[in-house]
Image (cartoon, helix red, strand yellow):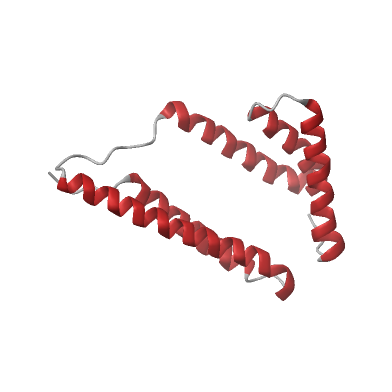
Length: 147
């Protein structure tokens, strides 16, 4: 039997590629505003490395047991991930047309409803607090103009 890698190894590689892109983009920011995105990118890369290490261990365990690595992706669970990702892509496109804060005011409640949050007071408070904190941190404190 051919030694196959566990799916976590491939997921980790994709995550590292994304983290590298994130860090590259963050390095284009001015010095002070780049600190947090750089931290996020580095932390994401470290998590990806841990996932790869875990995937390699799972692969080796399946090789010694002489069996196929178990695939963990099934369409029933994966379709919600794809729908959520499509929502995030639409949100990113909406930012270009209606700007950041209006797009966020629309996106957050829709995503919370998609995630089955049904209490309206939680949805409204989360949306307002999130937008307020983003404005306070990025616009007021860091003096960053959001799209």
